Every structure is written in C-alpha cells, then in structure tokens.
Amino acid sequence: MLARHSVLMVVVFGMVLSGLIYLNNIQCRLVYKQPDVLAGRTDVASVSPWSAPIIWEGNFDSALIDSIYKQHNLTIATTVFAMGKYTRFVKDFLESAEEHYFVGFRVHFYLFTDQPESVPEVKMGENRTLTIQKVPVLNRWQDISMSRMEKLEKLIETELASKADYIFCLDVDTKFYGRWGAETLGRLVGVIHPYLYNVPRNQFTYERRPASKAYIAAEEGDYYYAGAAFGGSLEDVHHLTRTCREQLSIDAANSIEAVWQEESHLNKYFLLNKPSKLLSPEYMWRGISEQAAPIKIVRFTNVPKNYAEIRPNP
Ligand SMILES: *[C@@H]1O[C@H](CO)[C@@H](O)[C@H](O)[C@H]1NC(C)=O
Ligand SMILES: *[C@@H]1O[C@H](CO)[C@@H](O)[C@H](O)[C@H]1NC(C)=O
Image (cartoon, rainbow, N blue to C red; front, side):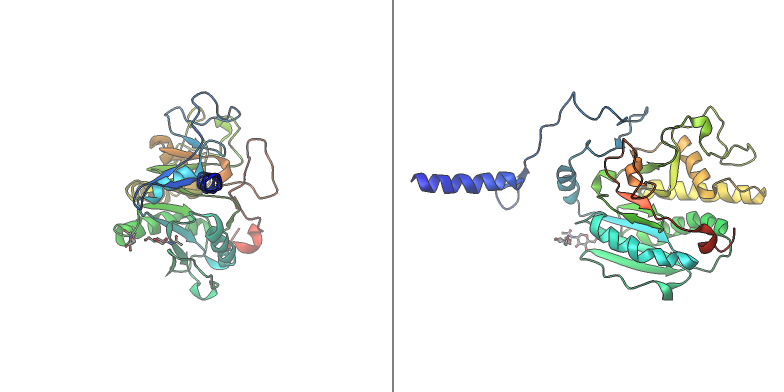
C-alpha cells in the first residue's frame, strides 16, 4: 500500500515538475510561478510612458506565453530581403531561426532576392515554410532599402490576408542566438536600437532636416527604433508600410533622402503611431560577443560585415 502511494506520488510529482497536469483530454493546466505584484527587474524600464510593455529577459514566463498563444494556431509571416551578395547571410539566418525563432509555431518565411539561384538549400522543419520571391536587380543599396516598404505593402495585400496572423520584417544579415517567441507578438511592435537605448533623444540619429518627411525635432522622440526588425498585425504593418512608402516617395520627389532611409521614416512613423509593444535591445543586439549590463541574453544580433565589399555602391 505504502509502496503504491509512493509510486503514485513520484508520478504526480513528476507531472508537476514537467509543468503540466492533464485533467482530461481537452483541458490541461499549466503550473507556473506566482506573478509578483511588487518584485520585478529594477535595472530597466518595463513599460513605456504610453503603457506599452518593453520586453526584457526576466519579465515573462516563456512556457506560460507559449501556452496562451499556441491555442490560436497562429501563422507568423516573416520577411527578409537578400539582394546581391546578401544571399550569403540566408543560411545562418534561417538555420538559427529554426533553432530559436517561434519554435513550435507555424512560420512562413518570405525571402525577396534578385538572385534566387544563389540561395542555399536550407532544411525547414515541420510547419515552417520558405517562399522565395524574385525581385528586379537594384543598383544602389539606398534604393534597395527604399523599395522594401513597397514590397512589404504588396505582399500583405496580395498574399498574406488569409494566410498569416502576424508579420515580422527582419534584416537578413543577422543571426538568432536565443529565444524570439510569442512574447514579441502585438498589434504594432518596434525594437529599441542597440546603440542608442541609453542616450538623450537629441543625440538620436533621426532625420533632422525639416525638408524631409522623416524630420523629428531635437526635443521630440521617444526611443530610437532599429530598422532591422519591426512587426505586428497585418493591418497595422500594412498601414506602416503604406505610410512609409508614401513618405519615402514624397522625399524622393523633393530630391531629399532621409539620413537612414527607411529607418528614419520608421522612426517618424513610430513617433506618430506608438508601438503597442517594444522589444528591448536583446532582440537586436550589436554582436554576440558585445556585453552590456542590462542585456542578460542576446537573442538576435546583426552579423559583422564589410559594407564596402558587400554593398553594390558606397
Ligand atoms: C492551423 O492553420 C493551418 C494554416 O492556416 C491550417 O492548415 C490547419 O488546418 C490549422 N490547424 C488547426 C488544428 O486548426
Ligand atoms: C504543426 O502544426 C500542427 C497543428 O496544425 C500541430 O498539431 C503539430 O504539432 C505542429 N508540429 C510541430 C512540430 O510544431
């Protein structure tokens, strides 16, 4: 009798340890740490002045978040552009994404490239798809940057409406080193830039010439957002891409090019349309070997490269 009890207890304990207690086939209960009203990270801000969460390691329970979002059978569309020699980054990007990016979720990658023939073969996991879209060759990297918004706008209109729930638009010269998961999902999501998260806003590299549609005055601005990653719902990202595409073309008609092209316009957009969720620089860091006190985990970084060698023009 005693032995049977202890066997039972070990089994029950094991189930608690593994996190899940199955009540029956349909309902299951997740056991997790009690949320604390008073304790949390004190070395970083976890919320913006408009009450949008800022996502940092230590402020979320990934198993809990996954269990909430997994009920919805979501599809995350994810776009990258690999023009010219940038196709060399595709393999590392996709392989590291297979390991860390929305693991266990349905992910559909859309790769835009002018050189489909030089995209390496990457084995994709179950529920993960790669679609390659050929785009015309562009000769200036500034034009490549400019045309992205237009391509994204069209993709959402023509392709994604019935096929995805959220979209993330990422740079391809990047690599995942840690979890990037459902904690990042939201209506409109921006990533705080890894080099400018701790400087006064008058030092942000916003476009400062009033002649540009991306202009932001020295005493304005919230955060400096990275152009290398943004996302959200299809509707919100469609509005973002349409607006930025329009503003970019007004600038082009006025023969002015914002200092950081689409990143400048993205920053203007986020000033006027506040993101509903902000990702800390863990989600776009400076490189795997760089350290900074608030960065407890590097999830995603850009890959060091020689611009002179890889860009079609200076
Ligand atoms: C989940 O979504 C995919 C793609 O939208 C669909 O093919 C599949 O049938 C869905 N599965 C369930 C269980 O609803
Ligand atoms: C793929 O998605 C289906 C639901 O549509 C799910 O049952 C299955 O477990 C998923 N596979 C993986 C490896 O996540």
